[in-house]
Image (cartoon, rainbow, N blue to C red; front, side, top):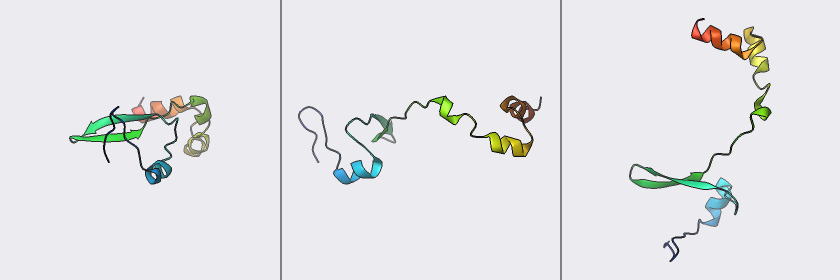
Length: 76
């Protein structure tokens, strides 16, 4: 594979499909151990969709609020 005149490369179709890289997917480059790493840019998560995810676990542990759990873990 060669880099084109404009600095572009084509990601092979099998890799695009395997990793879900579509035309609008944002990616980022990093240098790791003197190599270039291409990865999907992490999406910004809407915190609202995580609300209530730990309720069952906290109930089982006897906590009503996250703050209670954090205070207990910190030893307060």
